[in-house]
Every structure is written in structure tokens, then in C-alpha cells.
Length: 614
Ligand SMILES: Cc1cc2nc3c(=O)[nH]c(=O)nc-3n(C[C@H](O)[C@H](O)[C@H](O)COP(=O)(O)OP(=O)(O)OC[C@H]3O[C@@H](n4cnc5c(N)ncnc54)[C@H](O)[C@@H]3O)c2cc1C
Ligand SMILES: *[C@@H]1O[C@H](CO)[C@@H](O)[C@H](O)[C@H]1NC(C)=O
Ligand SMILES: *[C@@H]1O[C@H](CO)[C@@H](O)[C@H](O)[C@H]1NC(C)=O
Ligand SMILES: *[C@@H]1O[C@H](CO)[C@@H](O)[C@H](O)[C@H]1NC(C)=O
Image (cartoon, rainbow, N blue to C red):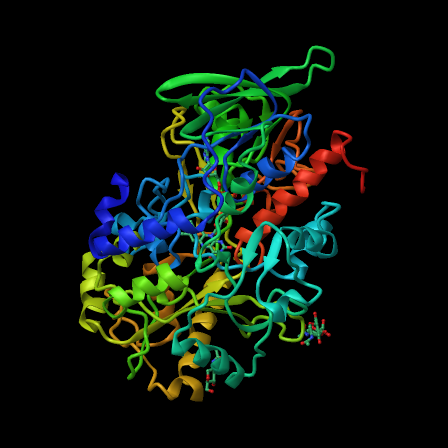
């Protein structure tokens, strides 16, 4: 518990005790036990137990005569990570890799943040970023997957991936479970939060006022507004560790080694073919270096920042970049390129006249904690984000169901916790906080985070050194294309319009008008002002992807093929969010779980354990 104690100031101690009691008593499945001694060799070695890695560990160990090792750099999730409303407290804790973006040239983004650097949290814990995330369950647009297939990736069309979304799913909302887009009985529990703020109804009906449908945005059509579906179970977070690893913790052919940090993949030339082949990995555990061999395959599931880092340290990456560090080149591939993320305007705040927002002062009390602990209900089950929407800016073709803007709605804003935690995890400069948000005091506020669904601008992950424990350099390169700027400006204006709908006017909703320090030279609220605002309060939705792009060998930017095998290196796959050739139009957790499910079947097919489908 010690590592997160710093941030516990605002959580009353009795509440911690109660949630801990609940945590121990209600989940019949306890944590998997971290193996004491790693064997010298396994059939499969999986690096990283996050959204994809946890799925793989489960599905590959279904084959009784395979043994599987899952190596995870972090430890266990805990009673705080279990409470949806406390998700923000995990960032900058020991469960977070605590990455930051590099200060951009020309101060093009993140100007409101200390050092011009935005925080990029990533889960360092069993369950990975699914333990830190906002639990939003979204699959993306059908066309995303059809495009992947068209880019030379057979098997990845929407029609072909839909069964793998459904395979994991246990949807607890009957109105959805019975449709052909959803299913029940899978490992991953999906449902609405049991508690709602009064404002989320205004969000959905405000969307209708604007001409959008209230619909299942994971169903037949994506464009529209919806109360969010989340990866939650009985009011608590359902991480991939809880969903996929706890139920199989007694399998004797699955070893899980925590606090085990992989530094590189071991690669040799296969004597007969002369081709490079992965045969194991090197990792640090308890301060000592270990190696483990893989009889069949090494699988990289370390996420969109760490998978490219480890590959580059192993000699798989752009030649010039590796040579800078005198790393012998095994395969010259565009690892770390094509970094894509969802970026938007943070801190866009609206005020209302009624006591309806989500404020710590309102919900930090005994009845609220008891309601959570005893009834699995109440405000603590709230995921932060209550509503989502997919909209068309004037640049999208509204008759195509190919929206270009996403809204995340929260019945709170930067001021709602009185500057205790949100301000800290965003890394916002004091001047900005004190000028814009402090004057709000404990006003009733709500937010829309408007973001670009398919940014044109792509960035990089590069090595900083050959030391695996040095953070790689992250350059998201946001807003490099004028189209991205123009589209996001329209997205912000759509959000402002939502506040003017009759549904929000019932609450007297209005835009917070104190301008961003540094932007007051622009008329408020002009297009130029909004551009300035998001170049300051640049907000990552925490969705990095694309850094080990999937594509055919003929594509010079591809790192893995459609079976997720690294081009030019045998017995090595990458299976996580980094393989997305183009970021999906939505939140990537469910898609990454789908990638894990689909890849598990491909591995079984390739080793003759399933009839081949392709
Ligand atoms: C704050 C936050 C909020 C988010 N909100 C949402 C949301 O609401 N909905 C949504 O869909 N998505 C959300 N996301 C994104 C989503 O969670 C990620 O896209 C998804 O979890 C990525 O899965 P992954 O398997 O690629 O990587 P991860 O889940 O990050 O897993 C990588 C794992 O590898 C481990 N690892 C890394 N390096 C090493 C090493 N060297 N050795 C051993 N292990 C290693 C890590 O510790 C981690 O456990 C959010 C993310 C964050 C951080
Ligand atoms: C769904 O989108 C398609 C276009 O992809 C469109 O033809 C259809 O009319 C839409 N359906 C509804 C119910 O809006
Ligand atoms: C919008 O999409 C529809 C359906 O695909 C198409 O018929 C129409 O020409 C498009 N409009 C524009 C302006 O591109
Ligand atoms: C916002 O609403 C105004 C007034 O109805 C309208 O003129 C404008 O086009 C809308 N903006 C966007 C981005 O839809």
C-alpha cells in the first residue's frame, strides 16, 4: 500500500478499510500467485500482462500440452484500483510507468503543462493499462477494420473480428446482450455503471436536440450518443487481470512472474535457414538478470511504448537509429514510427446552476462509501466518463457513418476535486490552474473532452539510451497537419453547442469564460482562440497505438504481418495496441482485447491446434 499513500490524503481512512474488506470478501477468485522460480524453458514466453497479454496467457494455456510463461514488470492491482471513481489516483503511483512526452519544437502542444510535457500514464501492473484506464468499452467503427484488411491484412475485416469481440464479452445489460453485436458468458464483464448523475440524461437528450440518435455506438451504426458501457463487474473495475487471469490461476501449465522486467529478446541465426529466430528473453527480477528460453515463440505484449522499446534494444528497428546506439541490426524495420493517439482539448468547462455535478466534497462521506461496499452501488461506481458520443464535424460526410469527432462527457471538471489530484496527474502549470480553474471554487461544472478520431499527424517512440530502464523518448507530434487543427476546432464548437441545447439549458448551462493564459490575445471564443487553447491544454485520451504497424512485407512501414509475426524474424510476434496500422475510431481497450483473442487463435492454427481458417 505504501507506494500510493501519497495520494490517499483525500480518501478517508475508514473508506480505505471498508473497500479493502469488500475487496477481500466479494471476489471469489483471488489473485494468481506469482511464480517463485521461473523454469529454464517454456513453449511460449509472453512479455507483458496487460490488455492483450492477459488474454494470451489465458487462451494459450488452454492447450494442456503447452506451457506458458507470462512476464510482467509490475505487481498486483489492489483495493484502490478496484473502485471506478478512484481511477485518477493510480496515475503517478507505482502502478504507472510515468511517461512524459518530449517538449515539442515550436511549443506546438502541451504548453499549459509543466515543462511543456504531457503525462502519458501506462499501466505497470498485472492487467496493464486496463487497471489504470477509465473502463470505457468501445469497439471503434466497422470501417476501421475493413480498412485494416484493405491495407493488406487478410482476416481483419469487421465481419472477421466481430466474433472475437463477442468471444470475450459478458454483457450484463439485457437490452444490448440480446442484439447480434453483443454476447454473454465471456470472461470480460461489460455493463453500465449502476449510478448516474442527473446530467448524463441531459447529455444524451442534448445529442438528440442536435439531431443525433441515442444508440448503441458499438452496434449497427456508430454515429450517436450513449450512456457509456464499461468494463466493470458488480460496481468494481473488471481489469484483464481480473477477467482473464484470476479464473485460470490454478492452471499448472501457466506461470506468471511479477516484478520481472524484460530488457531484450534473444535472437540467433537458425543454423539451417540462416534466418534470425527468437529463442528467449532476458529479464531482471529481484535485482538479478535472468534468461528464459522459448521452445516455440516469444510474444511481445508490452504495449505501444514498451514493445517498440524492447524490440529496438534487441536489434529490431530503424537501421540509422540503432546504429546511433551501436546496436547490431537484426532487422531494419520502422519500429516506433506511426505513433498515433487520440488528442483533444482538456479542461473545456461548463457551469450549471443546480447541485448535480460530481464533486469530491459531495461524495466523500460515510453513506456513499457504505453504499459502495455493501450494495455495490452509488457514486463510487462511476467511471469518471458517463457519456460518449460520435459526431460529424463539417469535414465529415454525415451520410457515411464515419464520424471524425468523439466526445467524452464527465459531470465534473478540473476544479471538482479542489485541485487535489486531477491537476497533479495532468501536470498543469500553477499559473493556468490558478487563473482558470481556481476561481471556480466548488462551482457545479461539467466537461466535454472533444477529440480527433483519426488524426493525420503521427509521431515516434525512440530510444534514449541502451539502458532498458531509461524511458524511451515519446514525441506524439500532435497537430502537425492543419487538417487536424481545423477538425478539432470544429469539434470544440460542437461541444459548445451541446451546452446550448434545451436539455442543458434546463440546468442553466453556460461556458466557463476565463480565457487560457497565453491565449488572451485571441478573441474569445474564436477559432484562433480554440486552436491556441488546445495547443496549451493538450489532452491525450491515453490511446497510443501503431508503433509496430501490421502490414504486408511490401509495405516499407510494416513491422508485423497479418499474423502478427515480425517481418524477417522467426518465432517472434507483437500482439498489443502497437500493431494497429491505423488507430481505431474509439477507445482501444476492447479492440486490444480482441487482438489478443484473435491472435491466440492464429497461434493455435499455426501450431496445428485448431483447424486453419485462412
Ligand atoms: C489513464 C488511462 C485511461 C484509459 N482509458 C481508456 C478507456 O476508458 N477505454 C479504453 O478502451 N481504453 C482506455 N485506455 C487505453 C487502454 O487501456 C490501452 O489502450 C490498452 O490497455 C493497451 O493494451 P496493451 O495490451 O497494448 O498494453 P498494456 O495494457 O499497457 O500492457 C502492457 C503490459 O506490459 C508490461 N510491460 C511493459 N514493459 C515490460 C517489460 N519490459 N517487461 C515486462 N513487462 C512489461 C506493462 O507493465 C503492462 O502490464 C486508457 C489508458 C490509460 C493509461
Ligand atoms: C447506418 O449507416 C449506414 C452507412 O454506413 C447507413 O446506410 C444507414 O442508413 C445507417 N443506419 C441508421 C439506422 O442510421
Ligand atoms: C457522402 O457519402 C455518400 C454515401 O457514400 C455519397 O453518396 C456522397 O456522394 C458523399 N458526399 C460527399 C460530399 O462526398
Ligand atoms: C453551432 O450552433 C450554431 C447556431 O445554431 C450554428 O450556426 C453552428 O453551425 C453550430 N456549430 C457547429 C460546429 O455545428
